[in-house]
Length: 152
Image (cartoon, rainbow, N blue to C red; front, side, top):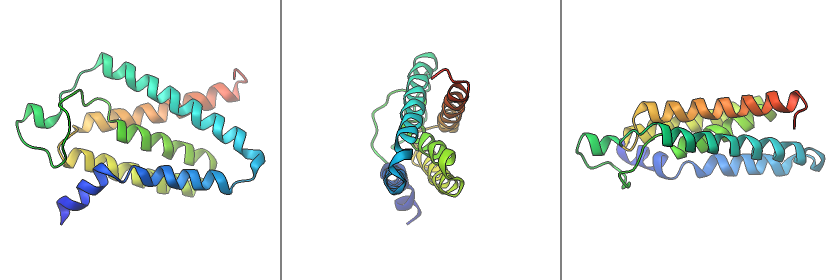
């Protein structure tokens, strides 16, 4: 039962934060859509680029490759750093925090659950998910600072 829960979280739960943030976006007044979309796109793209660079600079074989076991979910034996699932959901959580603190906290709970699940099922080491969280936080912080400075 416990394995099934973590398998579900590791494989499919990332869809829920996307739906939640999308629904939140569309229930907001139309006049706020532009600012929300600009922040979301900027933060997401910056996090993605930093994640790509991080993956090129730091190679972390997946646990099932190093420790020779079969993970609970099938995965190709590529670089585990950073975790794409956690990067996506952590950026979504940061976007949520920018616009609604309670929403952001709920999205962070989901992101952290996904992070734990990705480690539990054997496809990531903790450094992979911690790195993803750090990248997402930095990207949202950087975009906030750039926008508040009037650069963009």
